[in-house]
Length: 204
Image 1 (cartoon, rainbow, N blue to C red):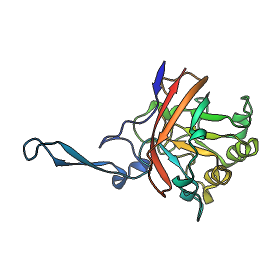
Image 2 (cartoon, one colour; image 1 turned 30 degrees about the horizontal axis):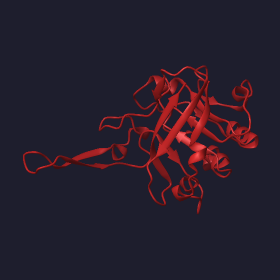
Image 3 (cartoon, rainbow, N blue to C red; image 1 turned 120 degrees about the horizontal axis):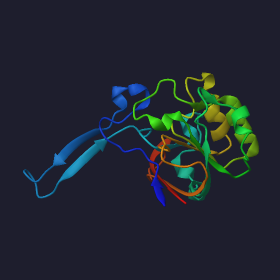
Image 4 (cartoon, rainbow, N blue to C red; image 1 turned 135 degrees about the vertical axis):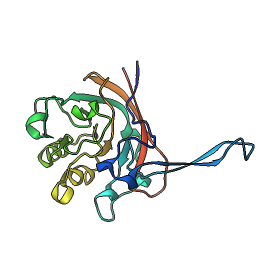
């Protein structure tokens, strides 16, 4: 079975804090009335929908998309059921699961059940991020448009990104059972940026 756990990109999709400037803009560049071909220009923020964050996003002079390692974005992942969390995913929530070095974890939360932006979305708190950093997981994905929410100094991002732990935001996991899958995450190949939109596929 193949599961596409990426957000659909469209003009009315959910964007971070419902900011109008973050919404994708589709412009018809040519059509069959004025040209021999139909073409569309798409303008959008690189943190739109499902995307990968790179260290530069939160760390001055941090690594960019140029340092991406595709092997980290492909292979076995674990979808963890965090739907019982009502605010943040903490260390105490994580220690209930058998998490090992090099695991890639995808957090299924209540975020997946809304197509509208949730201002108090479930996120990973700093202690949880530090715990995963200490374990040396390969990557972390979440079904919110942020791995953290209004945190001072962005320490959730920093604990992970400083250790080259991949962050995927904006997953859609409502129809995915909590278990192991083979994941393929392919960000757009854009040079020297702090984030890149991605298509994420799970196979069981």
